[in-house]
Image 1 (cartoon, helix red, strand yellow):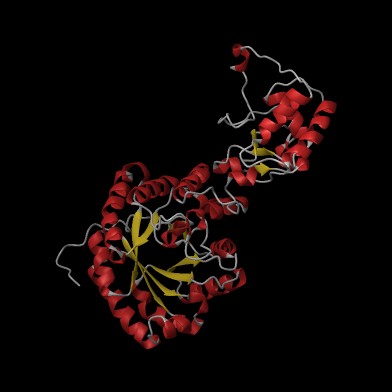
Image 2 (cartoon, rainbow, N blue to C red):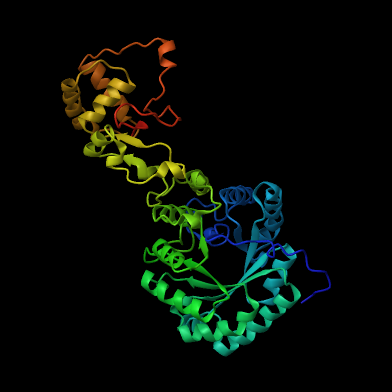
Length: 449
């Protein structure tokens, strides 16, 4: 390996790790999501990457993982643009490390160093499945390939952050993993513990983290948990509880197959578990906006299973809506407003009860009606709304019933009075709601599209 140039000044010597450090891999494992194929986009554009990296850095992420430059000419060329974004934010947000995900191949390493990577996330499959059907090397061959290369990188590039992972670690016998990790332990900053195929459980995570911490007390641990069993978030939380400092995440949890741990879901649950020390430096109110950004790149809405989402504050059933008109706490137990979800929705549709109908017609559309009339209108609306064509709005159906069938009149407010209304609950109002009286804190009513 060429070592003729002096090593750049090491940023890692100035870096003081926080209790939890996110290594976000949206631009590596996240690009492997099949969701990018759903609308024939296939990859994040350079502009997408620049915007995502900027958002991650502002959110508080200090480690961003990228593909090795050898993956494609496009990935190689995008490194410079991503570094420029990072450099433009150093004064404002401090240093962020760009890490290259590389195989234990000299060509991968050299390309990453040339691209200006701050660290290398090196990996090779260690499970029996990987050894037999992927690269075909036994444990002795893995050690012979990885150990000399990592030792050389550490000697020639002492400024680099080095992580080594046995890919598919949770299907690798612990003795086999120790055998490989022992050979490189003196030269790495972190050991990865990737649950590459999503087989781990929280109990297995706790047991393995304890074993790794006992054997390698001076090497930090990094987790990467796939969601094949739906356990990615639980496993990450358990790993953090057991003392793992570094965690791989993506925006919305996107990655190969079912994805990995969502960054905002992880931080949200750490907050609820009162693990406040692990939230240091993260801009929690930016959680929902950064989810919206990621969803926009995928041409979709924030997924309903993502905890930090508007869906998690959306109410359709009449019983729920009635309670929400009195106090949102009845069906909203978590402080999502602290994570940027500053609105809630009551969807006007076939499940709406008379309370929502009454509130919508009187408080939003200014019809003059009493509760008894609202109950009658709700019955007609419920019969009618099931027959709607896709392009017909439930809101307009309800207004037509009120005007044409019940002959209700609207209260005409002067413009001066309209301007003084501090909260509107229809979709025209972008502002955060105010209290509407004793315990009432609704945000807006919207119709089902």
